[in-house]
Structures are given as C-alpha cells and as structure tokens.
Image 1 (tube, one colour):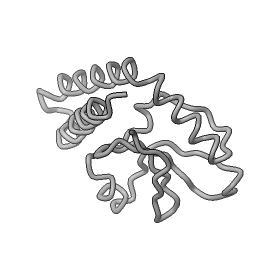
Image 2 (cartoon, one colour; image 1 turned 90 degrees about the horizontal axis):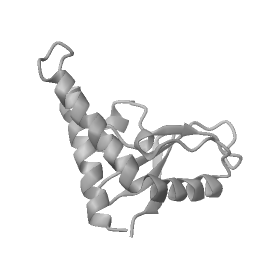
Image 3 (cartoon, helix red, strand yellow; image 1 turned 180 degrees about the vertical axis):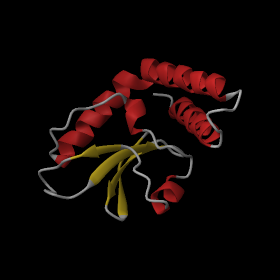
Length: 132
C-alpha cells in the first residue's frame, strides 16, 4: 500500500468537502464542485475500498461491533482538521455500537496526515489504526 498516495487521496476529498461547505447552493460552481467530489469519492472507493474495508473489518472486530461496514468514504472526516469539527459538535464519521462499551456513543472516522482511523468516544479520541 502506498501510504503517501492514500493520504493524498484523502486530502483531496477533504479539501473538496471543505470547498463545497463554504459555498451556497445558489453558487454557480456548486454543482461542478459537488460532481468533482463525487468523482474523487468514486475513485477512492475503487482504488482503496477493498483494502480499507479489510482494515475496517479488523477495527470492528477489535471493538466487538457487529455494525455493518460501509464504504470507506462514509467514514471520512468532513474537514482536514477533525479537531475543529469535533469542537463544533459535528458528527464525524460513522456511528458504531460495541459490546465492549454498551450504551456509549462512538464513531469511527478516517482522517489524513497520516491516514488513520480514530474512535471518537464522547469527548475523547483514540487511534485504532494508522496506515503503514
């Protein structure tokens, strides 16, 4: 796995998401930027989907979660700075249940720099996987 290429792909998607979030729906460029984002996400799932789904399966196993594993793009953060999004109470990533932490709100999110999967548990985060 080329970690740098994976990181670059994540950064490109997150950058496009940030760009789109600054636009109003009435912006003439909105539809074009949204289409570019969808193309990046499709390419990402095609290139890294199988690999990341295997990683997510391992992560779900460690958490003792039987939640469905979604496409990797569903887990991507919405910004290059996930800390900022967490401070604004945005719900990053995908909600999961765990037999290890019953009744606890948990989310899995894929972030960049380096590519890694974070477990967001209430007001804390834990790194569960880092690309090597």
